Image (tube, rainbow, N blue to C red; front, side):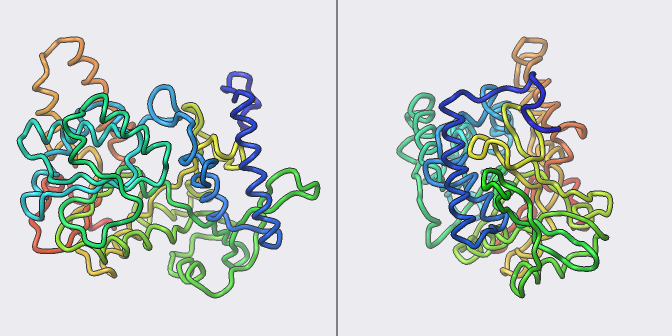
Length: 390
Protein backbone atom coordinates (compact mmCIF):
# COMPACT_ATOMS: atom_id res chain seq x y z
CA UNK A 1 0.00 0.00 0.00
CA UNK A 2 1.23 3.49 -0.82
CA UNK A 3 0.81 5.75 2.24
CA UNK A 4 -1.64 8.52 1.56
CA UNK A 5 -3.43 6.71 -1.29
CA UNK A 6 -6.26 5.84 1.11
CA UNK A 7 -8.30 8.91 2.04
CA UNK A 8 -8.52 7.59 5.61
CA UNK A 9 -4.81 8.27 6.06
CA UNK A 10 -3.99 11.34 8.17
CA UNK A 11 -2.60 14.21 6.13
CA UNK A 12 0.20 16.62 6.92
CA UNK A 13 -0.56 20.33 7.11
CA UNK A 14 1.17 22.76 4.72
CA UNK A 15 3.85 23.76 7.24
CA UNK A 16 4.71 20.11 7.92
CA UNK A 17 4.83 19.36 4.18
CA UNK A 18 7.17 22.32 3.64
CA UNK A 19 9.37 21.02 6.46
CA UNK A 20 9.53 17.59 4.81
CA UNK A 21 10.36 19.14 1.46
CA UNK A 22 13.26 21.04 3.00
CA UNK A 23 14.69 17.84 4.41
CA UNK A 24 14.14 16.04 1.10
CA UNK A 25 16.08 18.84 -0.60
CA UNK A 26 18.93 18.45 1.88
CA UNK A 27 19.07 14.70 1.28
CA UNK A 28 18.96 15.19 -2.50
CA UNK A 29 21.90 17.56 -2.20
CA UNK A 30 23.84 14.95 -0.23
CA UNK A 31 23.08 12.34 -2.88
CA UNK A 32 24.43 14.66 -5.56
CA UNK A 33 27.53 15.49 -3.56
CA UNK A 34 28.18 11.78 -3.02
CA UNK A 35 28.15 11.05 -6.76
CA UNK A 36 24.48 10.09 -7.14
CA UNK A 37 24.15 7.40 -4.50
CA UNK A 38 23.79 7.39 -0.70
CA UNK A 39 23.79 4.40 1.61
CA UNK A 40 20.47 3.81 3.30
CA UNK A 41 22.23 4.19 6.66
CA UNK A 42 23.18 7.74 5.66
CA UNK A 43 19.66 8.42 4.38
CA UNK A 44 18.12 7.10 7.62
CA UNK A 45 20.54 9.15 9.74
CA UNK A 46 19.52 12.33 7.90
CA UNK A 47 15.81 11.50 7.97
CA UNK A 48 15.91 10.98 11.72
CA UNK A 49 18.69 13.21 13.01
CA UNK A 50 19.53 16.02 10.54
CA UNK A 51 19.83 19.14 12.76
CA UNK A 52 16.58 21.08 12.84
CA UNK A 53 14.95 18.88 10.18
CA UNK A 54 15.23 15.19 11.11
CA UNK A 55 12.37 13.36 12.79
CA UNK A 56 14.02 13.32 16.21
CA UNK A 57 15.73 16.69 15.80
CA UNK A 58 12.68 18.80 14.99
CA UNK A 59 9.51 19.69 16.84
CA UNK A 60 6.87 17.26 15.59
CA UNK A 61 4.88 15.42 18.26
CA UNK A 62 6.16 11.85 18.31
CA UNK A 63 5.07 9.99 21.44
CA UNK A 64 1.72 9.13 22.95
CA UNK A 65 -1.83 9.18 21.64
CA UNK A 66 -1.30 12.46 19.75
CA UNK A 67 1.97 11.31 18.18
CA UNK A 68 3.03 8.53 15.85
CA UNK A 69 3.40 5.62 18.29
CA UNK A 70 3.07 4.71 21.97
CA UNK A 71 6.04 3.32 23.89
CA UNK A 72 5.74 1.20 27.04
CA UNK A 73 6.49 4.09 29.45
CA UNK A 74 3.79 6.18 27.72
CA UNK A 75 1.32 3.32 28.07
CA UNK A 76 1.36 3.01 31.87
CA UNK A 77 3.46 4.21 34.85
CA UNK A 78 3.54 0.59 36.01
CA UNK A 79 6.25 -0.06 33.42
CA UNK A 80 8.70 2.34 35.07
CA UNK A 81 7.61 1.36 38.56
CA UNK A 82 8.41 -2.26 37.75
CA UNK A 83 11.72 -1.35 36.14
CA UNK A 84 12.67 0.42 39.37
CA UNK A 85 13.11 -2.94 41.10
CA UNK A 86 15.85 -3.87 38.62
CA UNK A 87 17.44 -0.44 38.94
CA UNK A 88 17.64 -0.78 42.71
CA UNK A 89 19.42 -4.12 42.46
CA UNK A 90 22.00 -2.72 40.02
CA UNK A 91 22.63 0.42 42.06
CA UNK A 92 23.12 -1.59 45.24
CA UNK A 93 25.79 -3.69 43.53
CA UNK A 94 27.46 -1.21 41.19
CA UNK A 95 27.04 2.44 42.14
CA UNK A 96 24.25 4.88 42.67
CA UNK A 97 23.97 6.29 39.13
CA UNK A 98 21.62 5.89 36.17
CA UNK A 99 22.25 6.97 32.59
CA UNK A 100 19.32 6.86 30.18
CA UNK A 101 20.06 6.85 26.46
CA UNK A 102 17.52 8.73 24.36
CA UNK A 103 14.84 9.54 26.94
CA UNK A 104 12.03 10.27 24.46
CA UNK A 105 9.30 12.35 26.04
CA UNK A 106 10.92 12.01 29.48
CA UNK A 107 8.06 9.88 30.79
CA UNK A 108 10.27 6.93 31.76
CA UNK A 109 12.70 9.19 33.62
CA UNK A 110 9.93 10.91 35.57
CA UNK A 111 8.07 7.76 36.56
CA UNK A 112 11.24 5.82 37.35
CA UNK A 113 12.65 8.60 39.53
CA UNK A 114 9.32 8.99 41.32
CA UNK A 115 9.23 5.29 42.16
CA UNK A 116 12.85 5.28 43.29
CA UNK A 117 12.04 8.25 45.53
CA UNK A 118 9.11 6.33 47.01
CA UNK A 119 11.45 3.41 47.70
CA UNK A 120 14.05 5.71 49.26
CA UNK A 121 16.59 4.68 46.58
CA UNK A 122 17.04 7.77 44.43
CA UNK A 123 20.26 7.77 42.39
CA UNK A 124 22.87 10.40 43.16
CA UNK A 125 22.77 11.34 39.47
CA UNK A 126 20.35 10.59 36.64
CA UNK A 127 22.02 11.38 33.35
CA UNK A 128 20.13 11.70 30.07
CA UNK A 129 22.06 11.46 26.82
CA UNK A 130 19.70 13.17 24.37
CA UNK A 131 20.83 14.26 20.89
CA UNK A 132 17.56 16.04 20.10
CA UNK A 133 17.30 19.65 21.36
CA UNK A 134 13.52 19.52 20.98
CA UNK A 135 13.16 16.35 23.03
CA UNK A 136 15.55 17.68 25.65
CA UNK A 137 13.30 20.71 26.12
CA UNK A 138 10.24 18.49 26.41
CA UNK A 139 11.95 16.28 28.98
CA UNK A 140 12.95 19.29 31.05
CA UNK A 141 9.42 20.73 30.86
CA UNK A 142 7.89 17.42 31.98
CA UNK A 143 10.22 17.19 34.96
CA UNK A 144 9.58 20.81 35.92
CA UNK A 145 5.85 20.22 35.71
CA UNK A 146 5.52 16.83 37.40
CA UNK A 147 8.61 16.31 39.56
CA UNK A 148 10.42 19.63 40.15
CA UNK A 149 11.95 18.27 43.37
CA UNK A 150 13.96 15.78 41.28
CA UNK A 151 15.45 18.26 38.82
CA UNK A 152 18.65 18.79 40.79
CA UNK A 153 19.59 15.12 40.30
CA UNK A 154 19.14 15.13 36.51
CA UNK A 155 21.87 16.11 34.06
CA UNK A 156 21.47 16.32 30.27
CA UNK A 157 24.56 15.22 28.39
CA UNK A 158 25.80 15.88 24.87
CA UNK A 159 28.29 13.00 24.85
CA UNK A 160 28.93 9.85 26.84
CA UNK A 161 30.77 10.41 30.14
CA UNK A 162 34.38 9.21 30.29
CA UNK A 163 33.48 6.79 33.10
CA UNK A 164 30.24 4.96 33.83
CA UNK A 165 29.08 3.03 36.89
CA UNK A 166 25.63 1.77 37.81
CA UNK A 167 22.78 1.31 35.34
CA UNK A 168 22.78 2.38 31.69
CA UNK A 169 19.25 2.15 30.30
CA UNK A 170 18.10 2.14 26.69
CA UNK A 171 14.38 1.69 26.01
CA UNK A 172 13.67 1.54 22.27
CA UNK A 173 17.04 3.03 21.40
CA UNK A 174 18.66 0.31 19.30
CA UNK A 175 15.77 0.15 16.81
CA UNK A 176 16.33 3.82 15.89
CA UNK A 177 20.00 3.39 14.97
CA UNK A 178 20.69 3.73 11.22
CA UNK A 179 20.97 0.45 9.31
CA UNK A 180 22.47 -0.57 5.99
CA UNK A 181 20.33 -2.56 3.56
CA UNK A 182 21.85 -5.67 2.02
CA UNK A 183 20.33 -7.42 -1.00
CA UNK A 184 21.53 -10.97 -1.58
CA UNK A 185 21.10 -11.67 -5.28
CA UNK A 186 22.67 -14.25 -7.62
CA UNK A 187 25.15 -15.34 -4.97
CA UNK A 188 26.36 -11.81 -4.28
CA UNK A 189 25.74 -9.42 -1.38
CA UNK A 190 24.81 -6.00 -2.77
CA UNK A 191 24.22 -2.82 -0.80
CA UNK A 192 20.88 -1.17 -1.47
CA UNK A 193 21.11 2.60 -1.31
CA UNK A 194 19.21 5.70 -2.33
CA UNK A 195 19.46 7.59 -5.61
CA UNK A 196 17.31 10.11 -7.51
CA UNK A 197 15.07 9.30 -10.44
CA UNK A 198 15.84 10.62 -13.91
CA UNK A 199 13.88 13.80 -13.24
CA UNK A 200 15.80 14.33 -9.99
CA UNK A 201 12.51 14.76 -8.15
CA UNK A 202 12.01 11.49 -6.27
CA UNK A 203 14.07 9.02 -4.26
CA UNK A 204 14.56 5.55 -5.75
CA UNK A 205 16.32 2.38 -4.66
CA UNK A 206 19.60 1.42 -6.31
CA UNK A 207 21.84 -1.57 -5.58
CA UNK A 208 25.60 -1.63 -5.98
CA UNK A 209 28.39 -4.08 -5.16
CA UNK A 210 29.90 -3.68 -1.72
CA UNK A 211 33.58 -2.76 -1.53
CA UNK A 212 35.78 -4.52 1.05
CA UNK A 213 35.10 -3.16 4.51
CA UNK A 214 33.06 -3.59 7.70
CA UNK A 215 29.70 -3.93 5.93
CA UNK A 216 30.87 -6.67 3.58
CA UNK A 217 32.56 -8.45 6.49
CA UNK A 218 29.35 -8.28 8.52
CA UNK A 219 27.25 -9.53 5.60
CA UNK A 220 29.63 -12.45 5.00
CA UNK A 221 29.33 -13.51 8.65
CA UNK A 222 25.57 -13.92 8.39
CA UNK A 223 23.86 -17.20 7.52
CA UNK A 224 23.19 -17.42 3.78
CA UNK A 225 19.54 -16.30 3.68
CA UNK A 226 18.77 -17.35 0.11
CA UNK A 227 18.55 -15.59 -3.24
CA UNK A 228 16.72 -12.29 -3.83
CA UNK A 229 16.64 -11.63 -0.09
CA UNK A 230 16.67 -8.15 1.47
CA UNK A 231 17.49 -7.36 5.08
CA UNK A 232 19.29 -4.95 7.38
CA UNK A 233 22.78 -4.90 8.85
CA UNK A 234 23.40 -2.48 11.70
CA UNK A 235 26.96 -1.25 12.18
CA UNK A 236 25.91 1.52 14.57
CA UNK A 237 24.78 -0.83 17.34
CA UNK A 238 28.18 -2.55 17.75
CA UNK A 239 29.85 0.87 17.73
CA UNK A 240 27.54 2.01 20.56
CA UNK A 241 28.14 -1.13 22.61
CA UNK A 242 31.92 -0.77 22.26
CA UNK A 243 31.77 2.89 23.29
CA UNK A 244 29.73 2.03 26.38
CA UNK A 245 31.98 -0.92 27.25
CA UNK A 246 35.10 1.26 27.09
CA UNK A 247 33.59 3.61 29.67
CA UNK A 248 31.80 1.15 31.94
CA UNK A 249 33.73 0.54 35.14
CA UNK A 250 31.21 -1.54 37.05
CA UNK A 251 27.59 -1.86 36.12
CA UNK A 252 24.94 -3.04 33.70
CA UNK A 253 23.69 -2.01 30.28
CA UNK A 254 19.98 -2.80 29.95
CA UNK A 255 18.29 -2.60 26.54
CA UNK A 256 14.58 -3.13 25.88
CA UNK A 257 13.52 -3.27 22.25
CA UNK A 258 11.74 -5.28 19.60
CA UNK A 259 13.74 -7.84 17.69
CA UNK A 260 14.90 -11.41 17.35
CA UNK A 261 17.93 -13.68 17.73
CA UNK A 262 19.90 -13.98 14.49
CA UNK A 263 18.43 -17.27 13.28
CA UNK A 264 14.96 -15.76 13.43
CA UNK A 265 16.00 -12.32 12.18
CA UNK A 266 17.48 -13.72 8.98
CA UNK A 267 14.93 -16.52 8.60
CA UNK A 268 14.45 -17.56 4.94
CA UNK A 269 10.79 -16.53 5.11
CA UNK A 270 11.64 -12.97 6.22
CA UNK A 271 12.60 -12.00 2.67
CA UNK A 272 11.96 -8.25 2.87
CA UNK A 273 13.63 -7.48 6.17
CA UNK A 274 12.15 -5.68 9.15
CA UNK A 275 12.31 -2.02 8.13
CA UNK A 276 9.19 -0.20 9.32
CA UNK A 277 7.90 3.38 9.33
CA UNK A 278 5.40 4.99 11.71
CA UNK A 279 3.16 8.00 11.13
CA UNK A 280 0.12 8.91 13.22
CA UNK A 281 -0.24 5.35 14.53
CA UNK A 282 -0.02 3.85 11.05
CA UNK A 283 2.76 1.45 10.07
CA UNK A 284 4.12 0.97 6.55
CA UNK A 285 7.37 0.15 4.76
CA UNK A 286 8.11 3.18 2.54
CA UNK A 287 10.92 5.25 4.14
CA UNK A 288 10.72 7.83 1.32
CA UNK A 289 7.26 8.98 2.44
CA UNK A 290 7.34 12.40 4.15
CA UNK A 291 10.97 12.33 5.33
CA UNK A 292 11.35 14.18 8.60
CA UNK A 293 7.73 13.58 9.61
CA UNK A 294 7.91 9.79 9.78
CA UNK A 295 9.77 7.52 12.17
CA UNK A 296 11.97 4.84 10.57
CA UNK A 297 12.94 1.77 12.57
CA UNK A 298 14.50 -1.65 12.19
CA UNK A 299 14.18 -4.64 14.50
CA UNK A 300 17.21 -5.54 16.61
CA UNK A 301 19.47 -8.53 15.93
CA UNK A 302 20.03 -9.49 19.56
CA UNK A 303 22.66 -12.07 18.63
CA UNK A 304 24.70 -9.20 17.21
CA UNK A 305 24.32 -7.31 20.50
CA UNK A 306 25.43 -10.35 22.52
CA UNK A 307 28.39 -11.14 20.24
CA UNK A 308 29.53 -7.52 20.34
CA UNK A 309 29.28 -7.49 24.13
CA UNK A 310 31.50 -10.55 24.45
CA UNK A 311 33.98 -9.04 22.00
CA UNK A 312 34.02 -5.89 24.15
CA UNK A 313 34.76 -7.91 27.33
CA UNK A 314 31.25 -7.57 28.71
CA UNK A 315 29.23 -10.39 30.23
CA UNK A 316 25.84 -11.26 28.77
CA UNK A 317 23.88 -11.40 32.01
CA UNK A 318 20.46 -12.25 30.63
CA UNK A 319 18.16 -12.24 27.63
CA UNK A 320 14.42 -12.76 27.79
CA UNK A 321 11.06 -11.51 26.60
CA UNK A 322 9.61 -8.28 27.95
CA UNK A 323 6.81 -10.31 29.53
CA UNK A 324 9.19 -12.50 31.52
CA UNK A 325 11.33 -9.53 32.52
CA UNK A 326 8.45 -7.43 33.83
CA UNK A 327 6.80 -10.34 35.62
CA UNK A 328 10.12 -11.24 37.27
CA UNK A 329 10.47 -7.64 38.44
CA UNK A 330 7.03 -7.63 40.06
CA UNK A 331 4.65 -6.11 37.50
CA UNK A 332 1.63 -8.00 38.81
CA UNK A 333 2.50 -7.03 42.37
CA UNK A 334 2.53 -3.36 41.30
CA UNK A 335 -0.85 -3.85 39.64
CA UNK A 336 -2.16 -5.54 42.79
CA UNK A 337 -1.42 -2.43 44.82
CA UNK A 338 -4.30 -0.67 43.04
CA UNK A 339 -7.85 -0.91 44.36
CA UNK A 340 -9.42 -4.04 42.81
CA UNK A 341 -12.43 -3.27 40.62
CA UNK A 342 -11.74 0.46 40.50
CA UNK A 343 -11.72 2.35 37.20
CA UNK A 344 -7.98 2.88 37.52
CA UNK A 345 -7.41 -0.83 38.20
CA UNK A 346 -9.45 -1.89 35.17
CA UNK A 347 -7.67 0.57 32.87
CA UNK A 348 -4.24 -0.43 34.14
CA UNK A 349 -5.09 -4.12 33.79
CA UNK A 350 -5.82 -3.60 30.10
CA UNK A 351 -2.53 -1.73 29.68
CA UNK A 352 -0.59 -4.42 31.52
CA UNK A 353 -2.04 -6.97 29.12
CA UNK A 354 -0.53 -4.98 26.25
CA UNK A 355 2.87 -5.12 27.96
CA UNK A 356 2.90 -8.88 28.52
CA UNK A 357 0.54 -10.59 26.06
CA UNK A 358 2.38 -12.61 23.36
CA UNK A 359 0.18 -11.05 20.68
CA UNK A 360 1.03 -7.53 21.89
CA UNK A 361 4.43 -6.39 23.27
CA UNK A 362 5.12 -9.35 25.53
CA UNK A 363 7.07 -11.55 23.10
CA UNK A 364 8.07 -9.21 20.28
CA UNK A 365 9.91 -6.97 22.75
CA UNK A 366 13.04 -8.45 24.30
CA UNK A 367 15.32 -7.41 27.12
CA UNK A 368 19.08 -7.97 27.21
CA UNK A 369 21.47 -7.19 30.06
CA UNK A 370 25.22 -6.72 29.56
CA UNK A 371 27.56 -6.16 32.45
CA UNK A 372 31.04 -5.61 33.76
CA UNK A 373 32.19 -6.62 37.22
CA UNK A 374 31.11 -9.41 39.54
CA UNK A 375 27.34 -9.10 39.17
CA UNK A 376 24.60 -11.47 40.36
CA UNK A 377 21.89 -12.75 38.04
CA UNK A 378 19.69 -9.70 37.41
CA UNK A 379 16.24 -9.87 38.95
CA UNK A 380 14.49 -9.55 35.60
CA UNK A 381 16.01 -12.79 34.30
CA UNK A 382 15.33 -15.06 37.29
CA UNK A 383 12.89 -17.09 35.17
CA UNK A 384 12.64 -17.43 31.41
CA UNK A 385 16.27 -16.57 30.56
CA UNK A 386 16.78 -17.33 26.85
CA UNK A 387 20.48 -16.73 26.36
CA UNK A 388 20.71 -20.19 24.81
CA UNK A 389 18.64 -18.89 21.86
CA UNK A 390 21.16 -16.19 20.93
